[in-house]
Amino acid sequence: MTNEEVLAEFRAAEALLEGHFVLSSGLRSSRYLQCARVLMDPRRAERLAQALADRLPAGIRDLVQVVVSPAMGGVIIGHEMGRALGVPAIFVERPTGTFELRRGFRLERGQRVLLVEDVVTTGLSSREAIEAVKQAGAMVIGAAALVDRSNGSAELGVPFTPLIRLDVPTYQPDSLPSELAALPAIKPGSRVAA
Image: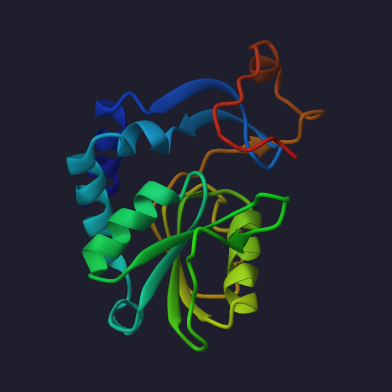
C-alpha cells in the first residue's frame, strides 16, 4: 500500500482532519489523523493491518508470538495485527496511570512481542508500554504503528515500522504560528494532554 493509498483510506473515512489540534503529548498541530474513524470499518482496518504486517521486516514478522498494544487507541489495530500475523493480541491499560496487563492477560517469560500503536508522536506511550511488557517478563522485538507523526524522531529502543510517516510540524502551546493560534484548539484523542 502506497502512502497515497493509505491517505485515501483516511480521507474516505473522513479521518484526515485539518484545524488546530491538541495532541496527547500536549503539542499542537494543524493536521490530525483520527485512527478511530479509519478503523471503525472492519474491512478497512483489516486492509491497513495487513499492509502494515507486510511492511514488517521478515526477521521480526516471522518471530512474533504475541501482539501487545496500549489501550485505548492501539486496541483495534493491535487486534487486526494479531489476525494478520496469526498470533494472539492483547493490550495494556493505565488504570492508575502506569501501563499494566489486566483482564487475565499475561505474557510468558521470554515471549517475543510486537508492540502495535495507532499513532506515534513522541514515542512516550510506546516506551511506557514496552516497559510494561518487560516488567511482565516478555521481550519486545519490534514496534509498529499505522502512523508515525514524530518526523522520524521517536526513539523506541526497538526496530520501528510505521505504515505511513506524516511529517506535520508540531508546536509548543506557547509557540504557535499566528494562523494556528487564531483557530480554536480541539482535543480529538482519548488521552488527557500532558
